[in-house]
Amino acid sequence: MPASFELTEEERLIQQTAHDFANDRIVPIAAENDRRGTFPKEILKEMADLGFMSMLIPEDYGGVGLGNFSLVLVLEEINRGCASTGVTMSVHNSLASSPIIRYGSDEIKKKFLPKMATGELLGAYALSEAGSGSDAASLQCRATKDGDFYVLNGTKSWITTGAEADVFVVMVRTNPKERSKGISSFVVESDTPGFSIGKKENKLGLRASSTVQLVFEDARVPARQILGKEGEGFKIAMETLDGGRIGIAAQAVGIAKASLDASVGYANEREQFGKKIGSFQAIQWKLADMATSIDAARLLMYRAARLRDAGKPHTQEAAMAKLFASEMSNRAAREAVQIHGGAGYLKDFPVERYYRDARITEIYEGTSEIHRIVISRNLTKN
Ligand code: CAA
Image (cartoon, helix red, strand yellow):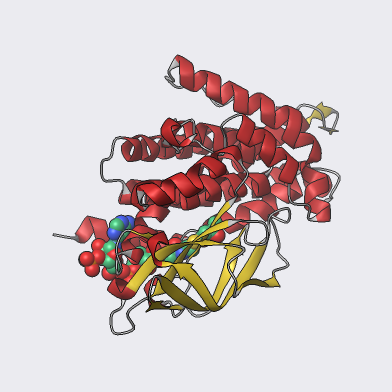
């Protein structure tokens, strides 16, 4: 369990439930799912039964509505077991259900949220395109109004959970004369005629999670499935990412904690020069640095989640948590491989998976470079 922190009784219980679930149901299958590239569908159903897929969905819409702080407690534990399962949970909660909760009409909320809460519908988020990654506001996918519908055309790239999701929050251009203000957000169902899955990517890590292209060819989406108003889509996308980035911080912390646990276990077992390697200061210092930086990242993550729950500004704090946690996680996973030596390079031990999985946390939901821009812009704005 994470180092002690003043949690409420309810939060402690949620954390313990997620901890036990990760150990019992996720850890045993994570390596095999990674090797085979198997999407953890059955596990997600069990997670929905525990409320893990409806952490932000209000009870009125069938969710547990516990908020972002409880969400990160659970996400850290799930990601400690399997980062592919963790990102699926994070995207579903923070990037798909959250904007529907915050910006959907009551009709849209009633249509989608109860089924997203039970896990019957899985959510995803589609912002990036081949030509617009970090420069998200330059996206080119188009939506043109046609009576009670918008007609979508274009291709989205690198969409997490895209192959399995049923409901997508999709950002498209409704006004080509504007930049960020020409973008709108829609909820799009996977069975919409004209919508299809394109290329499935072959990745370094997160191999039990799909990453695909989404192709829109005259896909007709009901106009009432817009989130907010026409032209508000970029702000919705950014505000949604403020929450998502806290979730990726939790993923990074979870991977780092798994790296530390494996390293402590190995240091207490492996003998060289007639002693446990954990008795050597070279190894002790690595473990101490890992544990200290994990706690620092976790505290940044807790702060950002609390601010988001309180409805207070948190763009900068979310960026700091994600930036620090993701870079920390990569260092921790690297050290875990180093502590394991030759064994760490083998598929027989989990640390090579942590090393591969950690890498994406510095890239998706905003690269480290973008987060430094977000933080420094906040520091220098008048
Ligand atoms: N909340 C609310 N509004 C925001 C905002 C936020 N966090 N950030 C920006 N905005 C608003 C601004 O206030 C501005 O509004 P006004 O014009 O009314 O002032 C508008 O949005 C445009 O903002 P900027 O001028 O700052 O826009 P920009 O083009 O300079 O871009 C950026 C800013 C920070 C670089 C942004 O493009 C960005 O975050 N890029 C990274 C994209 C990203 O994170 N992609 C991740 C893809 S999703 C993913 O990875 C999911 C997955 O697979 C798991």
